[in-house]
Picture 1 (cartoon, one colour):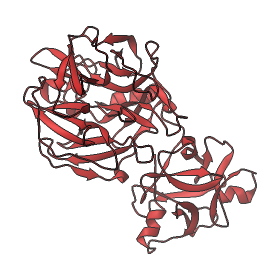
Picture 2 (spheres, one colour):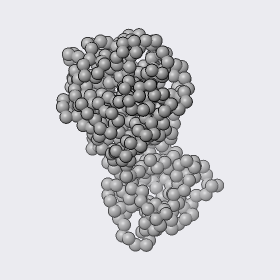
Picture 3 (tube, one colour):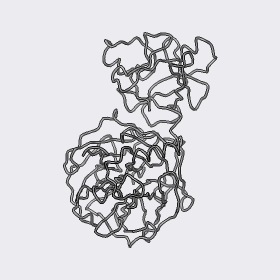
Picture 4 (spheres, one colour):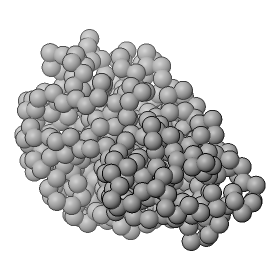
Length: 463
């Protein structure tokens, strides 16, 4: 089996299905149109390469564009299972027909995948600010796993379908139906082609259902469609999609605005970027374009989650309840898989993920030499700041001298390579900007006439 079971999930439908699949905008109103949603919430669990940042619990992040995410609750859990394995993977958030939410998750803790489990964790939630009715629901009596749930409303049955990964002699997708997420129908095979499959995500657009999944035999993502969404009714319509060396856990998302779509795939190699993405104006066509990594920033240490559209009021309420992080990350413009971090007290940019992951977290505080500017204090070594010394960037303890305060202060400006990003001019050597060179940070003279590559080296996204 692959090293992890990770995917995003989002169920989106039009008309009567909108509220059941994340399109509903007002809690308690299943008829609210998808257009009322202006933001997104993302539920996930966490892992890091050496397991130091692992968290097998429900985490939440929010975004206004569905691309760049800010964790809630300082990236700490908002709900943790207390039964079964007492840990979860693969959380899926569904907005039900009544506008409230249900959370489904794999009952598994850690990275050992040969433990078969017949149950899923389930919570109810009115607004994702509290989680009630925790229970485990049994889906079958087979000697196999119950992984990576996704769910959607089936009008013809007046029930929800819950689809998950299992093994029936080979890896297949199973389905159970429910009206209350407490009792479920007998399990049946949902999709079983001539090859092993994993990690389905299913959306509805008009009267057509679209399913994306991983073909385990060739390691690529495929799309299939059905006019009914019934078991064994899907026909492939895309060629295999792949970015990076390994990919799984597809997620297909209709954007809140416009008729555009995003398809996400999760890299499960610890040395690669965690996510790749495509975009398309036609979910029914085989016309996906690669979305540059520069355009999106997943939540820190995120694994296998789900995305749901929310209103501005819901966004505000979630932020009020859980709070946004008191730290930032600095993403490189021209190496968008790399983030500013300290290592052996040297400032540099390294490819994410890495450990200790806290090395990339900064408190961007009022400038030590000028409160209208900024300074960067390390989160995991408080009292140490990024400062320049002989133009090289170091992490050093604040001795409160005037020279240190000046060296550790930077004036934030519009990005030299992209004005929607940021650049940082040295406070006490004002003709020089913070930039990377051979992945190491320093300050160098830069102007609008400097080489484009140099301006890109000095441009960062604060997230």
